[in-house]
Length: 299
Image 1 (cartoon, rainbow, N blue to C red):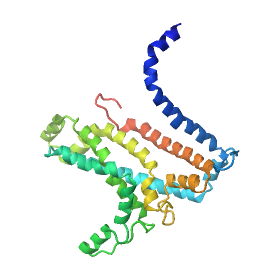
Image 2 (image 1 turned 60 degrees about the vertical axis):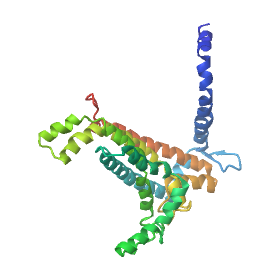
Image 3 (image 1 turned 120 degrees about the horizontal axis):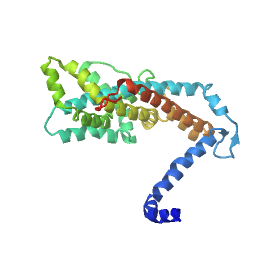
Image 4 (image 1 turned 90 degrees about the vertical axis):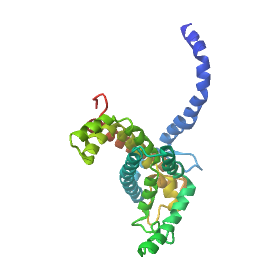
C-alpha cells in the first residue's frame, strides 16, 4: 500500500522524466553494453558476431598503427591542452582589467569555440595552412619566408591541428574570467602595499585562488582533447596522413569500425580509450589535493 501511494504521488514527475530515461537507456547505456559485448567478439556488421575472448585487446598491443595513434593522440593532448589553458587565462586576465565594451569582447572571443568544431572551419583551416594558403602567403610577402605546406608535411601537420584547438579557447576563457572576478581585490591591494610585484602577485594570489577553476578546465579540456575527431578527419582527408602523422585514436577507431568493418576491434579500442581517459582523470583528481586550494581552506 505504501509503495502504491508513493507511486501515485510521484507519477507525474516520473512521466515528465520518462523521455530522459528512454534516451539514457536507448542511446547511452544500451549501446555501451552492446559495445562491451562486441569488444570480445569478431564482428563485421554483415555476419553474426563470433566470440573470441580478449583477442581484440591483445591485438592492440601488436598493432603498429594503434601504437602510432596513441603517440599522435598523446602529443596532441599534452601540447594542446596546456597551451589552450595558458592562452585562455592570458586573455581572461586582459579582459578582467575593466575595459570598455567587455560583453562585446567576451562574445567575440567566444565565437571560435562555437565554430571551431565544425566541418566548415576545419576545411577553412586546411586551406589556410596549405602550401598556397593565407599563412604562407603572409609569411612570404611580409618576411620573405618560404614556408612548407603545413598540413602535408608530417613534421608539422599535427601542429596545425593543435593551433586550431588552441584557437578554440573561448569556453575556458569565460570560465577563467568568472573565476578572476571572484578573487577579492583586497588581496591585491594588500600585497601591493607590501611591495609584491606583478609576477609575485600572479603566482602567490591569482594562481592559488584560481586553482579550482584551473582544475575544472583541465579535466574538461583533457577529456575533450582525447575525443577529438573532426579536425583530424577533415584536415587529413580521413586517412590520418601524411604517413599517419595525424592518426588520432578516434580517427583510427573510426577507420577500423566503419571503413574496414572490424567493429569488434573498434569496440575494444573504444573501451581502451575509456580506460585511458579514466586513468588520466584519476591522476588529476589524485594530485589535486597538492595544488588545488579552496576558499574555505580545504584541499
